Each structure stands twice: as structure tokens, then as C-alpha cells.
Length: 329
Image 1 (tube, rainbow, N blue to C red):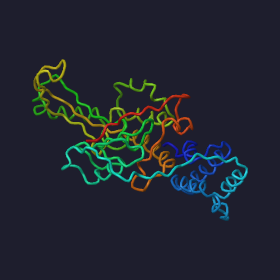
Image 2 (tube, rainbow, N blue to C red):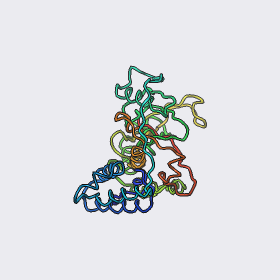
Image 3 (cartoon, one colour):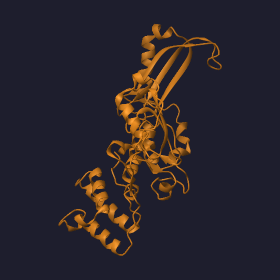
Image 4 (tube, helix red, strand yellow):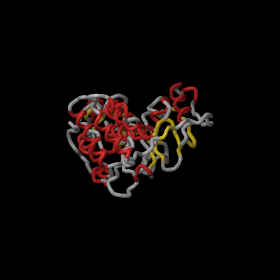
């Protein structure tokens, strides 16, 4: 099991860029975490409050953060404690118009989330697709364009690496009805379903040759988990099922018109995408303060935060690349 730890990136996101005080914060924070005095969220919340106003913590006898608070006060007197600004942002007063496709089928919660997102200071345009439903911050099926070099981790979503795949077999469509037991057996023999499942056999691991797996510390730490889950499916709305596919003339290059046996699958990110989104969302929310209803739409600046070390790029100067995630239907 991976040991939970408060990273220097998470502390830097609170506004600390003095090396000495960063080391002290890290020692105290991880000591409290190791001995179970507080959970990670409580520790970070206290440290954030301490940085904003260290005096209450300095005056508290026997307080866990007393020494840190005193150190911050002393450094500030000497003009040595510098912190990155955490700006409070207000939402725009007016809601910009945005297209909504299939309004009669859109959840009320999804529409409300989109109206909040379009009021962000960095929002440029938006739209709701017919399958839109409530998500984290931005509705699933919602599209939001933002100003250049800003990225909202929760808008990218927790479904990073989630995908749909359709495989077409050169077999008649009727096989799905005549060979039910064989087809069911193939699925159960070659796919592991459910939470925590790991693969039995690796048929192709070439995707792990990609340099993307070395781009950031967060991704590197998840590589072994991803490897163990290759070829598995999760739970919830994840599925793998056989079916019939009718191909019209000229619809698919290289495939003649006709009826075929097909396999449709939806595998989620299996925790990989959730871990990536959670890591950067916590950093974004600690840096960008928004009203309660918009807090999950906090953003990072790809230029400033990379230079400050918030985005833990593997090579100096390498830009964190923004990717679109699959969205659950």
C-alpha cells in the first residue's frame, strides 16, 4: 500500500517558497500525519490558516503548530518569509449565453453547474451536450473554453484514461445468439471485473513504453497500479458486452457492408484518472479561492505554476500537456 504523505508541492501550493520554512512545515506536517494526530486535509487546512494569520497558533500553549507559527512571525519581521499570493476571485455577475443541446433531457443540477462555470473569470464560452449530467464542478457532457494557459483539473475530470472501444469481428452477427456460452466464457476468461481487480495475463504492454509515464512524479507513482490493471474493467457503469453491428456501404473504410459480431467495452480510469485529478485539484483549490458553489472549478496557470514548481514536470521547462478526457455516457 502506498504510504500517504504531504508533499512539498502541496505545501508550496499554500504559498511557501522559502526553503528553510518549507523543510520545517514538511517535518511537522508529516510527523502529525504519521502518528495519526490529524488526517491530511485537517493538517493542510491548519497550515493554510497559520500562513494567513500565525498569531493564534503562536499564542496557543502546547499547540501542535506553535513552533511553526513563531518561526513564521520571526521570519516576517526580518522580511524573509515570502509566500505566493492566493487570490480570491469573484464570479461574473451576468451569465453569458451558451448553447444547450437536448434541453428537455438535461438534469437541473447539470444546468446549474454550467451556469456557475460560465461565470468564472477565465471562462470564454461553454455548451451542454445532450447527455449532460451533474458532475464535479463542471457537468459531465459540459464543454468550457477558458483563457489561454489556464486549466481546471476537475473540468478535465476524474475520467482521465477512461475510454470506449468497439471491436468488429469477421463473424456473422447471428453468432451473438447461437454461441452465447462461448462468448460469455471468453469475456470471463480474459477480463477481470470489479473494484480492485488485477489482470491475469498481459497480452500487450507496449503502451508503457511511452515517455508520458515519466513526465511527472504523480504519474510515475501510478504506473505499477496501471500495469496491474491492464485488461481489467471496473464497476459502476463499466461494461463489456457482445452485440450485432450493421455496417452500411462505405461507412467504414476496408469493411464491406453487412452484419458483424461486435464487442463494445467501457473501462474507467481505474483510479488513475481520479488520483491525477485529485492531486492537482487540491493544489488548484489552495491557490485559487472561489465562492463555495464554484470551488471545484479552481484553476492552475500552466506558465506561472510550472515555473513555481507546482506542476512537477520531469524535465526542466517541459510543459504539462492538457488532454481531453473521455466522458462517461
